[in-house]
Every structure is written in C-alpha cells, then in structure tokens.
Length: 509
Image (cartoon, rainbow, N blue to C red; front, side, top):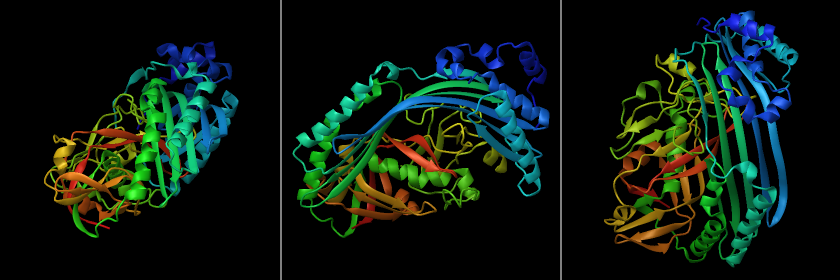
C-alpha cells in the first residue's frame, strides 16, 4: 500500500517552524486542550512520528495522539474510599513494514523521545517479518473531520463536593429504605477525551468526547442474601448523570430486590415460556451475538486472549434464530456510551445489522479482518487508550425492538417466568452455552405477573435461545457496560440494549 501523505509539506512545516497541518485544519484543537499544549503535547508531534516512519520505509502509518482528563470517586459502605483526578496523554503509531504490522507508544512527547521509540519499534518489526504473517489493510475512503459531543452541563463546572455529595445521597437513600444492605460499593467517574488521528493515506480526524459513568455493587442480607451490580454510562455532560436520578433509582431497586429475596418462591423446574426484560436481552445480545461476531475471534486471532467463536466465516446467510430476531451494533447513536463517528483506523462509523430476521448478516470488522474476507471495514476498530493497539470491538450492541407492547408478551402465557434483571450470568469460551440467574423475577400466571420468584435460572445455548424468540416488544432500553478484550486487557465503553422479548418453551430451574 503506497503512501499518499505529502512528505514535503511535513518537512517544510518543521523546517520553517510553521503550525502543524493538523492545527491549521482544526484550529480548535489548541483551544480545547491547553493543558496538553502547556506540557509539550503539541499536535505536530503526530505528524513528526508519521514522517519519521515513512522516511524509514514504512508502507502505511497511522498515528493517534490522545489526551484524557477526568475524575473518579468510590464509596464503600458510606465511606469515601478513593478519589482522584486523571490527566493522561500520549501518542501511538501503528505501521506496516514489508507487510508486518508494528505498534509503539509513548507519553514522552518530545521529538527526541518519539524518535527513539519509533526507530526501535521499526527495527524490531522489520526483523520480525520472517516470523509473522503478511498483513494487508482494506482500501478505505479518506476523511478530514472534526466532531465534539456537546455538554449541556459541563463536567468541568461540577465541583468535587457536588460529586461526592451525590454518592452520599445515594448511600443515604439506600439506607433509608430500611433494607439490610451491608455491602454498598458505589463508583462515579467522568472523563473528557481528545483524540487526533492521522493516517499516511491522508485521513485526519479530531474528536472530543466527554463521558460519565456510574457503577454499583450491592449485597443485601436477610432471609436470603442477594447481590446486584449494574452500570450507567453516556457520552455528554453532567445532565446525563442528573437524568439517571440515582438516589431514587437505587432506593427503589433495593426495596424490590429485598421483596424478591424475602417473598420469592422457588422457580418451577420445567419447560416454560419466559419473558426477558431489556437488561437480560441486552446482555444476551452483547455476549452471544456481539462477541462471537467479532471477525478476529472468528479467524482465531483472539483464541489465547479473549476467546473463540462458535461462528465460522461461511455462516453468513445461515439461520441462527426466528424471524423476530434482529441484532444491531451502532456507534453513531447520539449520547451513547459507545459513541464515535470514526473508528481508530479513520473508517467512518455506521450501523451494522449482525442478525437480520434470524439470519447471520454481518460480522464486526477492522481493516485487517475485512481484507481477509475480501470486504471493506465497517468501522469496528477501537482502542481504549493511547498505549493500546486498536482491535475489533463492539460499540452499542442491541436487540432491535419489535412492535408489541410489553404487556402483550404476557397475554397468552398460562405459566411462565418474567426475568426482569439478573444477579449473575456466564457464557463459555465460544459464546455458545450460557446461563442467566434472575435478580428481580416473577411468575407469570394466566397472562399476568404474579408472585416474585427467587433466582430462577435459564441455561440455554445460543441457537436454542434465538430460535425460541417469537416476539419482541417496543420498550427499547440501553445500559452501559465496560467490555473487556485484548492482551493487554482493554476495557471499552459500550451499551448493551434491547426490549423485552418472549422465549417459547425453554427449560427453567
């Protein structure tokens, strides 16, 4: 793949001390990250890194310059356990040398330091050529774009005291419920990430993405003990946190969980109809569709790290579920936790329909896996930080809603189970055999929600799961998750989503 980058322009800019090409194209870059500029994190360092690699002989180069600032606070049983301010910055480069893929990164952003790590990495990559596979990247369109996620209430304008007070209020509301909750772990965090991506083909992308996140883990005691964890997350400002109404939400949840633990009957041990609420549907879509449809897993490149897949490359167009089953992955959803408009390789993001009317329709690809299957990338390359290589990842994976009201899913069920939320789940290495244990769950009798059921268990394989679905409601919800994958591990912000769905004749224990 030949270079399309204008080396003479780079050389001229550095020789004459002119502004970098990036800062001239995106003048807001230097305004929005004064802390980066003050610490020598000037944006022309990315172009310097690219120019150096091209001069050494790289066929292709992509460089990402990333700065992140934010804060996090953790409460445990009413006590502020930890709190801190994050301010990180660094640059990475990924490049091809004779078809061998190299990667390097550093947070020492002087030209001398960058030159050292680049030359060392280039030498190692060139030496490794005889041992590695030949890597090719798909041909993609070139973009020069800048985008920012707007904040109605700027995170920077919210004081530390206000953030800590919110955690206090949540904890007080949990205790006010009179439910015994001896284990209360609450974590609140925020970040603003500024990323500049440049490729030797000419793409230049500048993005500013603020995120807010809340995670909790609760242990309730009494007649029966029960544990519950969940996460909220969005891109945007502090208005997102306010919309979650966390003190009220968690206070209500512990009361419902306590009632379920105290009054819940044992689940019938037999084949029943099951209605799964949006939280259950979301984790099912993420784990049994999103992960096994990652093309690097399918090609065996993640087997020793994140796992394998029951899906094979020749399964496109084969039936995996009933016609009511449609699962999508869409990073372009406004204010979603997994939001982006261009991926970490500069490919424009788009919605991917992974399952269409029960048929396997599309996999998640980066430029390398797309080339392996003679396709174009669908913009699924993501990296969690500047020092991590981009790999195939999900964004916002969700079961596409149907046309029913949730109540209509219950109407013709004589006896069944309503799994509204979960306390536990697991799935095997190939994303095929899985288990979900209910947290808030109810018996369905004659089309109506009846008694609470204590921790009913649904064990099922992926094909049976999606072939059992005969209807989907229109009550779509999205919930946040931090999805782990890679070596070293990368935790990526995602949304898990879906409506309530109905499963016919499945075994419940």
